[in-house]
Each structure stands twice: as C-alpha cells, then as structure tokens.
Amino acid sequence: MTAYKKALVLENLRLAYWTASKYKNCGFELEELQGVALVGLVEAADKYIPTKSSFSTFAVRVISNEIMERLRRERKHLGTVSLDEEVITSQDGDKVSLLELLPSQERGFERIEASHIVLPLFQCRKLREIERKAVYLTICKEMKQQEAGEHLNVAQSYVSRCVKSGLRKMRDCYPEEREEKLCR
Image (cartoon, rainbow, N blue to C red; front, top):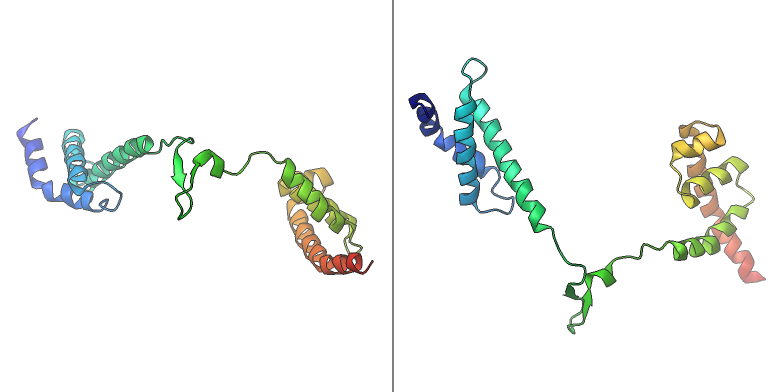
C-alpha cells in the first residue's frame, strides 16, 4: 500500500467508525461492524481515483456496501430452523412442532366452506350477471383482475368496479337470505 493510501486510511478512521455506527441497530456488535467498516475503508483507499469525487463520499459508499454485504451473508445463515423443532405453546408447557403450527397447504376445506357460504350469495337477485362473473372469477377462481377482464372481454378497471359493487350487493343480500332460511 502506498504512503498516499495509508494516509487516506489514517485520516478517515473516524469516518469508518461513524458509518459503522449507522448500522448499530442491525443485530450485530458495534465492534464487529467497525471491523467490517475498516475493511471497507482500506478497500475504498485501494480503489479510489482522485479525479472522480471526494474520498469521503466514495469511502462512505464502499464502507456501507461492505457492511450490507456482510449483514446479508450473516443473515442467510441465521434463518435456518427445523420444522420438527418443538415450541412451547401454552402456560402448562405443552409442546408442539413448528410443522403442526403451520397452516395446511390443502385448499379443499376452504373450497367446501366457500361453496356453503359464498355460492348461495351468487343467487342474490340484486347482482347483475357481469358482477356475478367478475366476483366468481376473482374470488372463487383466484384470477387476477386483468385475467378476469380478458376472460370477460372488459377492461381491468371495469372488473374492479364490478367486483366492488358485486361484493357490496352480496353483503346487503346476506342478512335477507339468512332471515328467509331461518323463517322457513
């Protein structure tokens, strides 16, 4: 390392420590961040070209990039957890695996529930046919509004309005439908 680059490093030690202090709430020790910042400062001194910009501007960017790269690398390794790991779920000390706490990926139950709850609402007399189809495609078939618009040969914005008005009408019909069934 040349004398000029050594001088840049020595003159900007406080800059490296200051930059590291901006990341002190990221879950890492300040001393570790300062060490990474010093590595970034040396790297900045090696790559610096005096005619492009001031050294401090360049150094802060290089130091920040070095710190962010280190944080990303470390966080990748922190995120591994076994789904078979047991966790305490109650005050009594009952233990359950994480896998048991995750929601089921099977969608069959949701579809059965929807058929008993939502499908009778499609019979609401207040719904126009386009609203019925728009709600069915976007909610039941889980199509994007753009796809539903292509299917119905209308614009996405019109599908959005139809879904909004259709759901409002269905909500309005729900108490009436329920009361009619209870009176029978």
